[in-house]
Image (cartoon, rainbow, N blue to C red; front, side):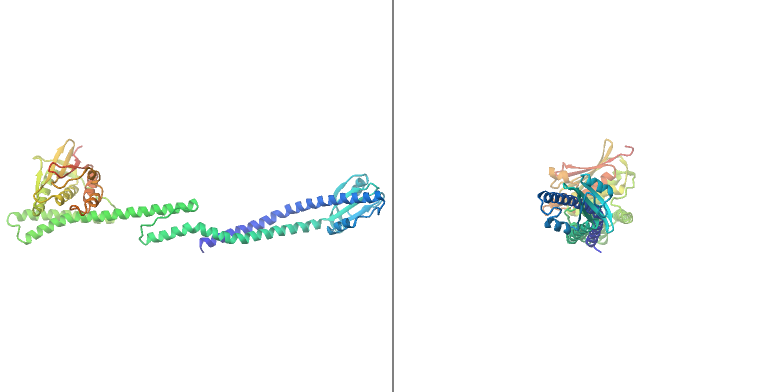
Length: 450
Protein backbone atom coordinates (compact mmCIF):
# COMPACT_ATOMS: atom_id res chain seq x y z
CA UNK A 1 0.00 0.00 0.00
CA UNK A 2 1.44 3.35 -1.05
CA UNK A 3 2.03 6.20 1.36
CA UNK A 4 -0.57 8.25 -0.54
CA UNK A 5 -3.25 5.60 0.04
CA UNK A 6 -2.26 5.24 3.66
CA UNK A 7 -2.31 8.99 4.14
CA UNK A 8 -5.77 9.32 2.59
CA UNK A 9 -7.15 6.42 4.64
CA UNK A 10 -5.63 7.79 7.81
CA UNK A 11 -6.94 11.28 7.11
CA UNK A 12 -10.39 9.85 6.32
CA UNK A 13 -10.42 7.81 9.51
CA UNK A 14 -9.38 10.84 11.54
CA UNK A 15 -12.07 12.93 9.86
CA UNK A 16 -14.71 10.26 10.52
CA UNK A 17 -13.75 10.08 14.18
CA UNK A 18 -13.84 13.87 14.30
CA UNK A 19 -17.36 13.84 12.81
CA UNK A 20 -18.52 11.28 15.38
CA UNK A 21 -16.95 13.14 18.28
CA UNK A 22 -18.33 16.44 17.01
CA UNK A 23 -21.82 14.92 16.77
CA UNK A 24 -21.70 13.45 20.26
CA UNK A 25 -20.28 16.62 21.75
CA UNK A 26 -22.61 18.95 19.89
CA UNK A 27 -25.88 17.24 20.84
CA UNK A 28 -26.06 18.46 24.46
CA UNK A 29 -24.86 21.88 23.38
CA UNK A 30 -27.41 22.07 20.59
CA UNK A 31 -30.16 20.78 22.87
CA UNK A 32 -29.30 23.40 25.47
CA UNK A 33 -29.29 26.10 22.81
CA UNK A 34 -32.60 24.89 21.36
CA UNK A 35 -34.14 24.72 24.80
CA UNK A 36 -32.97 28.24 25.58
CA UNK A 37 -34.39 29.48 22.29
CA UNK A 38 -37.66 27.60 22.89
CA UNK A 39 -37.95 29.13 26.35
CA UNK A 40 -37.32 32.60 24.88
CA UNK A 41 -39.96 32.00 22.18
CA UNK A 42 -42.42 30.73 24.81
CA UNK A 43 -41.79 33.81 26.95
CA UNK A 44 -42.51 36.07 23.98
CA UNK A 45 -45.66 34.15 23.11
CA UNK A 46 -46.87 34.26 26.71
CA UNK A 47 -46.34 38.01 26.85
CA UNK A 48 -48.12 38.46 23.51
CA UNK A 49 -51.01 36.26 24.61
CA UNK A 50 -51.47 38.09 27.90
CA UNK A 51 -51.28 41.47 26.13
CA UNK A 52 -53.79 40.37 23.47
CA UNK A 53 -56.25 39.13 26.10
CA UNK A 54 -55.95 42.30 28.16
CA UNK A 55 -56.57 44.45 25.05
CA UNK A 56 -59.66 42.49 24.07
CA UNK A 57 -60.98 42.60 27.64
CA UNK A 58 -60.40 46.36 27.81
CA UNK A 59 -62.13 46.94 24.48
CA UNK A 60 -65.05 44.74 25.40
CA UNK A 61 -64.62 42.72 22.22
CA UNK A 62 -64.43 39.02 22.64
CA UNK A 63 -62.92 39.16 26.07
CA UNK A 64 -61.00 36.06 26.85
CA UNK A 65 -60.66 35.11 23.21
CA UNK A 66 -57.32 34.93 21.40
CA UNK A 67 -56.68 36.24 17.91
CA UNK A 68 -56.76 33.46 15.33
CA UNK A 69 -53.20 34.20 14.21
CA UNK A 70 -51.92 33.78 17.75
CA UNK A 71 -53.88 30.55 18.15
CA UNK A 72 -52.34 29.19 14.95
CA UNK A 73 -48.86 30.22 16.14
CA UNK A 74 -49.39 28.35 19.40
CA UNK A 75 -50.70 25.25 17.66
CA UNK A 76 -47.85 25.22 15.16
CA UNK A 77 -45.40 25.01 18.04
CA UNK A 78 -47.48 22.39 19.88
CA UNK A 79 -48.15 24.87 22.65
CA UNK A 80 -51.24 24.47 24.80
CA UNK A 81 -52.83 27.60 26.30
CA UNK A 82 -54.96 27.72 29.43
CA UNK A 83 -57.13 30.59 30.74
CA UNK A 84 -57.43 30.26 34.50
CA UNK A 85 -60.08 32.16 36.49
CA UNK A 86 -59.10 33.75 39.79
CA UNK A 87 -60.64 30.84 41.65
CA UNK A 88 -59.92 28.26 39.01
CA UNK A 89 -57.97 25.00 39.17
CA UNK A 90 -54.39 24.65 38.06
CA UNK A 91 -53.90 23.10 34.57
CA UNK A 92 -52.06 19.75 34.28
CA UNK A 93 -48.40 20.05 35.25
CA UNK A 94 -48.77 23.43 37.00
CA UNK A 95 -47.94 23.36 40.68
CA UNK A 96 -49.90 25.23 43.35
CA UNK A 97 -46.86 27.45 43.95
CA UNK A 98 -46.82 28.55 40.30
CA UNK A 99 -50.55 29.16 40.31
CA UNK A 100 -50.39 31.18 43.55
CA UNK A 101 -47.52 33.30 42.21
CA UNK A 102 -49.23 34.11 38.91
CA UNK A 103 -52.51 34.91 40.63
CA UNK A 104 -50.53 37.28 42.82
CA UNK A 105 -49.55 39.18 39.71
CA UNK A 106 -46.14 37.64 38.99
CA UNK A 107 -44.90 36.39 35.65
CA UNK A 108 -43.66 32.86 36.21
CA UNK A 109 -41.28 30.65 34.14
CA UNK A 110 -41.16 27.05 35.31
CA UNK A 111 -41.21 23.39 34.28
CA UNK A 112 -43.75 20.76 35.09
CA UNK A 113 -44.72 17.17 34.45
CA UNK A 114 -47.99 16.22 32.76
CA UNK A 115 -49.34 12.76 31.95
CA UNK A 116 -47.82 13.25 28.47
CA UNK A 117 -44.37 14.17 29.76
CA UNK A 118 -42.27 17.12 30.87
CA UNK A 119 -43.30 20.59 29.74
CA UNK A 120 -42.05 24.16 29.77
CA UNK A 121 -44.47 26.54 31.55
CA UNK A 122 -44.93 30.26 31.11
CA UNK A 123 -47.67 31.90 33.27
CA UNK A 124 -48.77 35.53 32.98
CA UNK A 125 -51.32 37.39 35.11
CA UNK A 126 -54.19 39.19 33.32
CA UNK A 127 -55.35 42.69 34.13
CA UNK A 128 -58.95 41.50 34.25
CA UNK A 129 -58.09 38.89 36.85
CA UNK A 130 -57.06 35.30 36.35
CA UNK A 131 -54.07 34.21 34.31
CA UNK A 132 -52.98 32.71 30.99
CA UNK A 133 -50.66 29.70 31.14
CA UNK A 134 -48.79 28.28 28.14
CA UNK A 135 -47.26 24.78 28.11
CA UNK A 136 -44.87 23.30 25.54
CA UNK A 137 -43.66 19.67 25.68
CA UNK A 138 -39.90 19.21 26.01
CA UNK A 139 -40.15 16.48 23.37
CA UNK A 140 -40.62 19.25 20.84
CA UNK A 141 -37.31 20.73 22.00
CA UNK A 142 -35.67 17.30 21.64
CA UNK A 143 -36.98 16.88 18.11
CA UNK A 144 -35.66 20.32 17.11
CA UNK A 145 -32.31 19.55 18.73
CA UNK A 146 -32.13 16.23 16.86
CA UNK A 147 -32.92 17.96 13.59
CA UNK A 148 -30.18 20.50 14.25
CA UNK A 149 -27.66 17.75 15.04
CA UNK A 150 -28.66 15.90 11.85
CA UNK A 151 -28.06 19.02 9.82
CA UNK A 152 -24.65 19.43 11.47
CA UNK A 153 -23.84 15.76 10.81
CA UNK A 154 -24.84 16.10 7.14
CA UNK A 155 -22.61 19.16 6.83
CA UNK A 156 -19.72 17.29 8.44
CA UNK A 157 -20.23 14.27 6.17
CA UNK A 158 -20.27 16.52 3.12
CA UNK A 159 -17.06 18.09 4.39
CA UNK A 160 -15.61 14.59 4.77
CA UNK A 161 -16.55 13.73 1.19
CA UNK A 162 -14.82 16.86 -0.04
CA UNK A 163 -11.85 16.22 2.28
CA UNK A 164 -11.05 12.80 0.73
CA UNK A 165 -10.13 14.07 -2.77
CA UNK A 166 -8.48 17.14 -1.29
CA UNK A 167 -6.50 14.88 1.06
CA UNK A 168 -5.50 12.69 -1.87
CA UNK A 169 -4.29 15.72 -3.82
CA UNK A 170 -2.41 17.04 -0.78
CA UNK A 171 -0.85 13.63 -0.11
CA UNK A 172 0.30 13.36 -3.72
CA UNK A 173 1.78 16.83 -3.51
CA UNK A 174 3.51 16.14 -0.19
CA UNK A 175 4.94 12.82 -1.39
CA UNK A 176 6.17 14.21 -4.71
CA UNK A 177 9.59 15.05 -3.19
CA UNK A 178 9.71 11.53 -1.75
CA UNK A 179 9.03 10.03 -5.17
CA UNK A 180 11.74 12.26 -6.61
CA UNK A 181 14.11 11.07 -3.86
CA UNK A 182 13.21 7.46 -4.66
CA UNK A 183 13.93 7.98 -8.36
CA UNK A 184 17.20 9.74 -7.55
CA UNK A 185 18.26 6.91 -5.25
CA UNK A 186 17.50 4.36 -7.99
CA UNK A 187 19.56 6.39 -10.49
CA UNK A 188 22.43 6.55 -8.00
CA UNK A 189 22.18 2.80 -7.46
CA UNK A 190 22.37 2.35 -11.24
CA UNK A 191 25.62 4.31 -11.30
CA UNK A 192 24.49 7.80 -12.25
CA UNK A 193 26.38 10.53 -10.38
CA UNK A 194 24.94 13.68 -12.00
CA UNK A 195 21.86 13.51 -9.78
CA UNK A 196 20.87 16.66 -7.89
CA UNK A 197 17.68 17.05 -5.88
CA UNK A 198 16.03 20.36 -5.08
CA UNK A 199 15.01 20.33 -1.39
CA UNK A 200 11.28 21.04 -1.18
CA UNK A 201 8.25 20.15 0.87
CA UNK A 202 8.18 19.77 4.66
CA UNK A 203 11.45 20.10 6.56
CA UNK A 204 11.77 16.34 7.10
CA UNK A 205 11.28 15.61 3.39
CA UNK A 206 13.65 18.42 2.37
CA UNK A 207 16.24 16.93 4.75
CA UNK A 208 16.01 13.64 2.83
CA UNK A 209 16.80 15.46 -0.43
CA UNK A 210 19.76 17.24 1.16
CA UNK A 211 21.01 13.95 2.63
CA UNK A 212 20.81 12.28 -0.78
CA UNK A 213 22.70 15.19 -2.33
CA UNK A 214 25.41 14.81 0.32
CA UNK A 215 25.46 11.05 -0.26
CA UNK A 216 25.83 11.56 -4.00
CA UNK A 217 28.67 14.04 -3.43
CA UNK A 218 30.35 11.57 -1.07
CA UNK A 219 30.00 8.80 -3.67
CA UNK A 220 31.48 11.05 -6.34
CA UNK A 221 34.40 11.92 -4.06
CA UNK A 222 34.89 8.30 -3.04
CA UNK A 223 34.86 7.03 -6.60
CA UNK A 224 37.18 9.86 -7.57
CA UNK A 225 39.60 8.79 -4.85
CA UNK A 226 39.36 5.21 -6.09
CA UNK A 227 40.13 6.25 -9.65
CA UNK A 228 42.98 8.41 -8.42
CA UNK A 229 44.29 5.55 -6.37
CA UNK A 230 44.11 3.10 -9.28
CA UNK A 231 45.88 5.55 -11.57
CA UNK A 232 48.47 6.17 -8.88
CA UNK A 233 49.09 2.46 -8.41
CA UNK A 234 49.40 1.89 -12.15
CA UNK A 235 51.80 4.83 -12.23
CA UNK A 236 53.89 3.25 -9.50
CA UNK A 237 53.88 -0.19 -11.08
CA UNK A 238 55.00 1.15 -14.43
CA UNK A 239 58.36 2.49 -13.18
CA UNK A 240 59.89 -0.81 -11.91
CA UNK A 241 58.26 -2.71 -14.77
CA UNK A 242 59.91 -0.38 -17.27
CA UNK A 243 63.29 -0.86 -15.62
CA UNK A 244 62.96 -4.66 -15.50
CA UNK A 245 61.74 -4.78 -19.09
CA UNK A 246 64.56 -2.53 -20.30
CA UNK A 247 67.32 -4.47 -18.59
CA UNK A 248 65.78 -7.79 -19.66
CA UNK A 249 65.73 -6.67 -23.30
CA UNK A 250 69.30 -5.43 -23.00
CA UNK A 251 70.43 -8.78 -21.60
CA UNK A 252 68.55 -10.77 -24.24
CA UNK A 253 69.96 -8.61 -27.04
CA UNK A 254 73.48 -9.02 -25.70
CA UNK A 255 73.94 -5.31 -25.17
CA UNK A 256 75.13 -5.90 -21.61
CA UNK A 257 78.17 -8.17 -21.39
CA UNK A 258 80.98 -9.13 -19.15
CA UNK A 259 81.36 -7.40 -15.84
CA UNK A 260 78.12 -5.38 -16.34
CA UNK A 261 75.93 -8.50 -16.21
CA UNK A 262 76.09 -9.01 -12.39
CA UNK A 263 75.40 -5.32 -11.78
CA UNK A 264 72.47 -5.42 -14.20
CA UNK A 265 71.11 -8.57 -12.57
CA UNK A 266 71.33 -6.92 -9.16
CA UNK A 267 69.46 -3.91 -10.50
CA UNK A 268 66.76 -6.11 -12.03
CA UNK A 269 66.45 -8.00 -8.74
CA UNK A 270 66.12 -4.70 -6.82
CA UNK A 271 63.46 -3.42 -9.20
CA UNK A 272 61.64 -6.75 -8.99
CA UNK A 273 61.73 -6.47 -5.19
CA UNK A 274 60.19 -3.00 -5.44
CA UNK A 275 57.54 -4.38 -7.75
CA UNK A 276 56.84 -7.19 -5.29
CA UNK A 277 56.49 -4.62 -2.48
CA UNK A 278 53.99 -2.61 -4.50
CA UNK A 279 51.94 -5.71 -5.31
CA UNK A 280 52.00 -6.63 -1.62
CA UNK A 281 50.73 -3.14 -0.83
CA UNK A 282 47.91 -3.62 -3.31
CA UNK A 283 46.91 -6.88 -1.64
CA UNK A 284 47.06 -5.26 1.79
CA UNK A 285 44.96 -2.35 0.59
CA UNK A 286 42.43 -4.74 -0.90
CA UNK A 287 42.21 -6.64 2.38
CA UNK A 288 42.13 -3.61 4.66
CA UNK A 289 40.10 -1.27 2.44
CA UNK A 290 42.70 1.44 3.03
CA UNK A 291 43.62 4.34 0.77
CA UNK A 292 47.09 5.13 2.15
CA UNK A 293 50.38 3.28 1.75
CA UNK A 294 51.87 1.51 4.72
CA UNK A 295 55.04 3.14 6.09
CA UNK A 296 57.77 0.87 7.57
CA UNK A 297 60.55 3.14 8.94
CA UNK A 298 64.10 1.77 9.39
CA UNK A 299 67.60 3.29 9.54
CA UNK A 300 68.44 4.24 5.93
CA UNK A 301 71.60 5.67 4.36
CA UNK A 302 70.24 8.15 1.83
CA UNK A 303 73.66 8.43 0.13
CA UNK A 304 73.67 4.75 -0.76
CA UNK A 305 70.02 4.95 -1.79
CA UNK A 306 70.73 7.97 -4.00
CA UNK A 307 73.72 6.27 -5.61
CA UNK A 308 71.60 3.23 -6.46
CA UNK A 309 68.81 5.37 -7.90
CA UNK A 310 71.34 7.44 -9.87
CA UNK A 311 72.72 4.32 -11.56
CA UNK A 312 69.21 3.20 -12.58
CA UNK A 313 68.17 6.57 -13.95
CA UNK A 314 71.48 7.16 -15.69
CA UNK A 315 70.82 4.06 -17.76
CA UNK A 316 67.16 5.05 -18.21
CA UNK A 317 68.05 8.53 -19.47
CA UNK A 318 70.80 7.47 -21.86
CA UNK A 319 68.44 6.62 -24.78
CA UNK A 320 66.87 10.07 -24.36
CA UNK A 321 70.36 11.67 -24.53
CA UNK A 322 69.84 13.23 -21.12
CA UNK A 323 72.77 13.23 -18.70
CA UNK A 324 71.98 12.27 -15.12
CA UNK A 325 74.29 13.81 -12.52
CA UNK A 326 74.37 12.99 -8.82
CA UNK A 327 75.35 15.37 -6.06
CA UNK A 328 76.01 13.16 -3.05
CA UNK A 329 77.99 13.81 0.14
CA UNK A 330 81.06 11.69 0.79
CA UNK A 331 79.84 10.57 4.21
CA UNK A 332 76.72 8.59 5.00
CA UNK A 333 73.48 10.47 5.69
CA UNK A 334 71.31 8.33 7.92
CA UNK A 335 67.59 8.94 8.41
CA UNK A 336 64.88 6.79 9.96
CA UNK A 337 62.43 6.35 7.14
CA UNK A 338 60.99 3.84 4.69
CA UNK A 339 63.54 3.25 1.88
CA UNK A 340 60.89 1.92 -0.51
CA UNK A 341 58.86 5.12 -0.14
CA UNK A 342 61.95 7.29 -0.58
CA UNK A 343 62.73 5.43 -3.82
CA UNK A 344 59.16 5.99 -4.91
CA UNK A 345 59.66 9.71 -4.33
CA UNK A 346 62.95 9.77 -6.24
CA UNK A 347 61.58 7.69 -9.10
CA UNK A 348 58.49 9.84 -9.47
CA UNK A 349 60.53 13.05 -9.49
CA UNK A 350 63.12 11.58 -11.86
CA UNK A 351 60.49 10.28 -14.26
CA UNK A 352 58.75 13.66 -14.23
CA UNK A 353 62.07 15.45 -14.88
CA UNK A 354 63.13 13.06 -17.65
CA UNK A 355 59.80 13.51 -19.41
CA UNK A 356 60.27 17.28 -19.83
CA UNK A 357 64.07 17.31 -20.32
CA UNK A 358 65.08 17.95 -23.95
CA UNK A 359 67.90 15.92 -25.56
CA UNK A 360 71.35 17.13 -24.58
CA UNK A 361 70.16 18.53 -21.23
CA UNK A 362 71.01 17.40 -17.70
CA UNK A 363 69.01 16.07 -14.80
CA UNK A 364 70.45 16.27 -11.31
CA UNK A 365 69.74 14.04 -8.31
CA UNK A 366 71.05 15.71 -5.16
CA UNK A 367 71.08 14.54 -1.55
CA UNK A 368 72.41 16.71 1.26
CA UNK A 369 72.00 17.62 4.89
CA UNK A 370 70.29 20.90 5.77
CA UNK A 371 70.05 21.58 9.49
CA UNK A 372 67.75 18.99 11.05
CA UNK A 373 66.58 17.73 7.67
CA UNK A 374 67.89 15.49 4.97
CA UNK A 375 67.17 16.91 1.53
CA UNK A 376 66.35 14.82 -1.53
CA UNK A 377 66.27 17.01 -4.63
CA UNK A 378 65.72 16.50 -8.36
CA UNK A 379 66.45 19.30 -10.83
CA UNK A 380 65.94 19.38 -14.59
CA UNK A 381 66.67 21.55 -17.62
CA UNK A 382 63.12 21.51 -18.91
CA UNK A 383 60.72 24.42 -19.55
CA UNK A 384 60.20 25.02 -15.83
CA UNK A 385 57.07 26.16 -14.04
CA UNK A 386 55.34 29.51 -13.72
CA UNK A 387 54.41 31.10 -10.41
CA UNK A 388 50.85 29.85 -10.90
CA UNK A 389 52.18 26.35 -11.63
CA UNK A 390 54.16 26.31 -8.40
CA UNK A 391 50.96 26.91 -6.40
CA UNK A 392 49.22 23.82 -7.83
CA UNK A 393 52.15 21.57 -8.69
CA UNK A 394 51.23 18.92 -6.10
CA UNK A 395 47.50 18.93 -6.83
CA UNK A 396 46.40 15.75 -8.64
CA UNK A 397 46.17 16.30 -12.37
CA UNK A 398 46.56 20.11 -12.19
CA UNK A 399 49.68 20.36 -14.39
CA UNK A 400 48.39 17.59 -16.61
CA UNK A 401 45.29 19.64 -17.42
CA UNK A 402 47.31 22.82 -18.01
CA UNK A 403 49.94 21.37 -20.34
CA UNK A 404 48.19 18.48 -22.04
CA UNK A 405 48.97 18.81 -25.72
CA UNK A 406 51.52 21.57 -25.02
CA UNK A 407 54.42 19.61 -23.56
CA UNK A 408 55.04 15.98 -22.54
CA UNK A 409 52.93 15.25 -19.46
CA UNK A 410 52.03 12.17 -17.46
CA UNK A 411 48.83 11.36 -15.61
CA UNK A 412 49.37 14.23 -13.19
CA UNK A 413 49.43 11.93 -10.17
CA UNK A 414 53.16 11.44 -9.70
CA UNK A 415 53.80 14.80 -8.02
CA UNK A 416 50.65 14.45 -5.91
CA UNK A 417 51.93 11.08 -4.73
CA UNK A 418 55.32 12.61 -3.91
CA UNK A 419 53.65 15.20 -1.70
CA UNK A 420 51.51 12.57 -0.01
CA UNK A 421 54.43 10.23 0.60
CA UNK A 422 56.63 13.07 1.89
CA UNK A 423 53.99 13.99 4.46
CA UNK A 424 53.53 10.32 5.33
CA UNK A 425 57.28 10.12 6.05
CA UNK A 426 57.06 13.14 8.36
CA UNK A 427 58.54 15.60 5.87
CA UNK A 428 57.33 17.95 3.20
CA UNK A 429 57.66 18.51 -0.53
CA UNK A 430 58.62 21.85 -2.11
CA UNK A 431 58.91 23.14 -5.65
CA UNK A 432 60.83 26.01 -7.19
CA UNK A 433 63.13 27.05 -10.01
CA UNK A 434 66.32 25.09 -10.77
CA UNK A 435 69.70 26.61 -11.57
CA UNK A 436 69.77 24.35 -14.66
CA UNK A 437 66.84 26.34 -16.06
CA UNK A 438 63.98 23.97 -15.31
CA UNK A 439 62.09 22.95 -12.18
CA UNK A 440 63.47 21.99 -8.77
CA UNK A 441 61.57 19.52 -6.59
CA UNK A 442 62.77 19.16 -3.04
CA UNK A 443 61.69 16.73 -0.32
CA UNK A 444 62.83 17.38 3.25
CA UNK A 445 62.91 14.44 5.63
CA UNK A 446 63.78 14.62 9.34
CA UNK A 447 67.20 13.25 10.29
CA UNK A 448 67.46 10.36 12.73
CA UNK A 449 67.07 11.65 16.28
CA UNK A 450 65.21 14.88 15.23
